[in-house]
Length: 627
Ligand code: ADP
Image 1 (cartoon, rainbow, N blue to C red):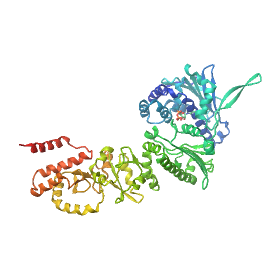
Image 2: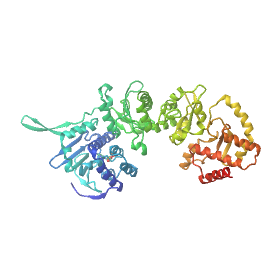
Image 3: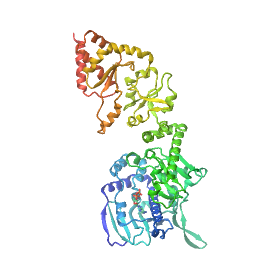
Image 4: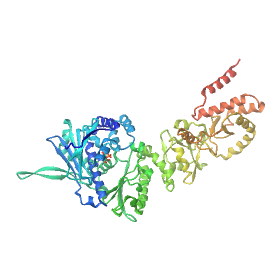
């Protein structure tokens, strides 16, 4: 190596930790390094090829796109070379001395905490692919010549914390990654091993991955290039010609997921727009979906030439969990990306893809409910985001939602269609109750009448629910109503309630004036066993939404709620009688407060001052037990 102009630099500090973790924790999957290097090489070729579309100087250059793998047993090196875009000195320092993506800290923590089996998935998502080569190499040299540059540059490191950078010789544009394999990893130099790894991981890479292979021609041995990958773009083939394994292996290549997909969509569209697409619905929420800033959209190819990855115009943001490729030969190849965004064909493909994805989700739901429920547990938040954002498809999206429900066992999920199909005779609405945990919701006094009538109630425990459910006011012409605002409408009880309310009016008014922070005190028939419960005022925000907003420092805090009393309950009756005989009795306030306290406890809310509550109860107990 020409050491002119060379300097030694340190890796960014987080990178040191990442390197350490990768080399020590990915051990059972160390062969992924080859896939990572090959896909980097392929990306580098795609970049220069794309740039050469409108750059004459590049177009004249070396366009015999090729990735070469060279094992050299004599010195124990494995080299991956490409004639891609190459890197300048500044780029190499930036790309191979630091981790480009944000959230490295989180990545490190996550990597430490997850099962070893899930680690490879994380590695790919974080763009630390290159560094995985330090699992098998004790030293790596990179020699690269950037497109249009006169000088080549050399980078070298043992992965321990520092790297050197200096000048180098390279005749033409491109990059060589030279791995000095560890003694114990020399079997990666075996041509059979290399062949099978390329087949397994990188078969669909469009550019030929070649390796010089010796063959005997009579007496004389000769060396010829052997292409290791089939290069078949799966999406262009017809469905019958693609095996399950090929789909899965392709999915692994483009997604960084190590699991099989939940659903595969192979689309050959003809008509107003012709395109081919291969999309995948994952089983799980990948790490970057959870914490990262993931852009939606499959890769866009025009006749197998990668144009954009991801192409955001092809899918709405809420479908960012969908991975895949789209190839549309009708798009003009020689266009700028800005002009491409405005091409009306993209809009048509977008519409068609969304339709296909919705249909695939529907099919999964009806054909394999268990798989769909697993998918929904992982990705339901995105579907809910779609409900809030995609007004046009609201009802179709709503039909994909799953909820726990009062009439089901814990963990049992129901769709809105199933809920509607099971409506009771007198019931004309869809009821839901939102709260943190199912067990507390199921015993909330607000639901006693529902339980009594056997009317079902959706129990919404996902923190997103209070935000998205208001965007759905009805489903299949049935209004959606919050069960803590609306009680079942029973015509036979209404008249009785009105009469009772008139008699109770003075007591209710008195309690309202004595108890703080209440919007109103009224009677209701929604309870059967309980004496009291709290419900939201008609004009107030959903109480759970208020809580969640307060947690993120937004909103105006909790709105005053309505205390509802059950006039059939002995305590309420006794309080009424006491008030009739002596309206100024101090116990009216005391027991009114007691009814409010128990409403809070029954719904699982925390009392703001438990000590004061106990003092009140003890005062009442002492009075009761007095001799
Ligand atoms: P990722 O490929 O996920 O971004 P890597 O650590 O594998 O992460 O690579 C970091 C960056 O280094 C790449 O994004 C790319 O810009 C650059 N790079 C890696 N290999 C090559 C190569 N063979 N040719 C040109 N650039 C490369």
